[in-house]
Image (cartoon, rainbow, N blue to C red; front, side):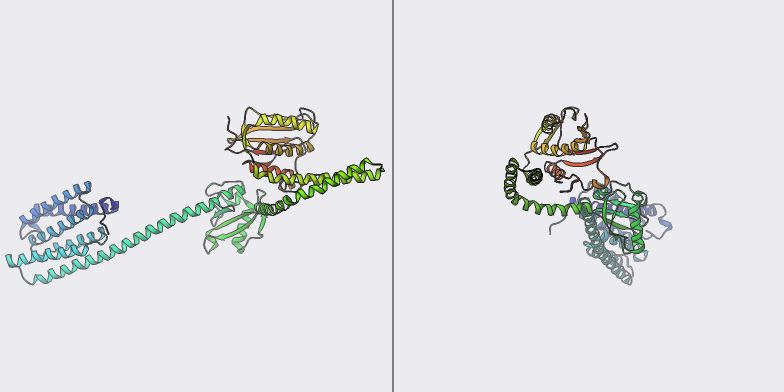
Length: 527
């Protein structure tokens, strides 16, 4: 394994070494103070006060030099640690000798140095430092016995001191290994928590089902975008569920009391049909819950889309086969009408002809669904196209000019298939003409800009659409007209979505109906 470069040592390594050096500085100042001012009155340095004071001064200078090296971070971390601990191993035995030997207990300060070395170096070469400290202490004791006739019995105390060095070094080594393992585990758990938090954020953001997190008191802690969209409200932190969504709060309270909601599916405050599911944050429901909101209208729409996809594949195959016999029936009926027949037969033939034409219109509308995947999008000025469309519509429907008007404040360029937009406008205007009063200005095509997107409102002055029918407007084959196919609005919405636009119904404060086409922010920039 390659050695660690100075840049690879984290900042906390250097910080720990700096704290250790502050301890050495305080100790050096204490030794100088005791040796220079009050050494004669204390037990430190009585044997050789000059040696004690000189060694303390040198130790102080070495400590100050260590601060300079720490600021430069040169040499590398391992060498600086070795120099500081090595300095203690060199100076403390000298101070012990100057204080009269092992009985002065100055050598015990090496225990602190060895423990610090083990913790700072995370257990590296701690036992080596203990061995150096033992050798240094034994050499000083040998010198004292040979030169100063110190008692040989002191070797027992010195030996016990050396054993303490190894014991402390081993404990520091073990604690450092445990600390490193705990630090790595904490870092790994921290990364896992960050990953899980990011994953939870992405899941909540992208989930189609609404999610609300509430505490035991019904305060909203978190809400994903789908819930805000379904409930049509983005609460602030700490907002009460009971004040914002009373019906939902009642279900939450029932779940806390009985462990289950009163009903699986219900109509919420905003009129949304949703299926509720409560999950306790912990085993005890007193700690709050996660509320899942499944949009039943979306699920029904998806189921409807699946059925319609199958139906579309079937009708696409048989549409051409249906048109051939219809054409034959229509032609034969027209021939019969030209002959000599009585009024009763004439009425029956007209019924046959009208119904064949209606069936033919249904087939034509179904065939239009296949066009949505073949959109040829181009950029054009919407008010200019509307002016041309109004002329064509007036001529085809034989209505007076002024009944259908265009309100636009200038050029508004959009990206859309020209054929598709004409089909959408034809369906919407045909419905508006059928329900409007037919007076000047009864039908209006209003071009505007809202939140950076071009919008087109198709508005009439009719009685409007009943609330109970509002949720079924875009369902295929849903119609209130006796001769309607129920596919006009559905096809219009499908064509809008194929061109990156949205079609929805807007309820007006006054009488009338309004269908809005939103072309989106990526469309409709001024040319």
